[in-house]
Amino acid sequence: MTKRKFKPAAVIFDMDGVLVDSMPYHFIAWYEALQPLGIRVSAFEVYEREGERWEKSLRDFITQGGLKPTPELMRKVFLRRRRIFRKYFKRTIFSGVEECLCALKKKGLILGIVTGTPMPQLKKILPRKIRSYFDTIVTGDLVKKGKPHPESFLKAAKSLNLKPFQCLVIENAPLGIKSAKAAGMYCLAITTSLPKAYLMEATTVVSSLKDVVAVLGRFRK
Image (cartoon, rainbow, N blue to C red; front, side):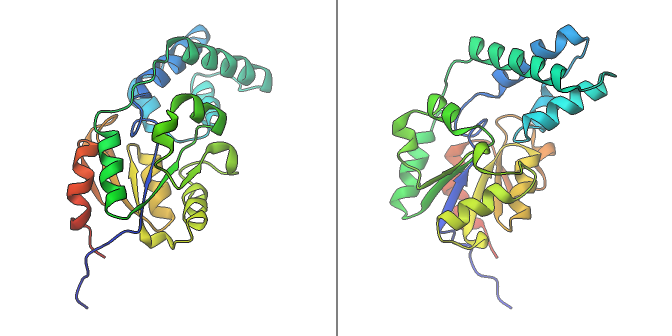
């Protein structure tokens, strides 16, 4: 059978590390929140887990540190982590985001966001002007299972009245890539947080959002 060009109807973006340069702040928050317990985490350990529910990440970090993840300890560390993140975080939208979104809209593409961040926090992080480009936004508080489970991407496709294979996902971390592919979607990964070697399960890998529009025509079914 002759292969046809992949012409997506929608492009679905992750937020942290794709639209917003927030991953360094997430690392700082995790590092400083766990340090009093004698637990050290590296940037790669945090970045690899991007998109995962905080409960699982925290439980794993505490367990790997040789401690018992009791509800009391989990809550204490979570609140400390949240406080540290809010203290340091400065919103920085990646260069080329609005230009990319405008170009995709001009091509008639539907746009969405799938993120593990809760909706109230997303509204504080992502400017209203940027949010206005998107036809659907699925946040972590709207699903039961986080990445790498495909629920969030499937929910986004359903809300757009599209089949999963009609969607192209833009991700920056392994769990997000797994989630998109498990949903039956194509996935383009960006090396904003992790090197290409960590992102090889994606359909293709690029260095920035500036490359997204250019590579759309290269996808094939």
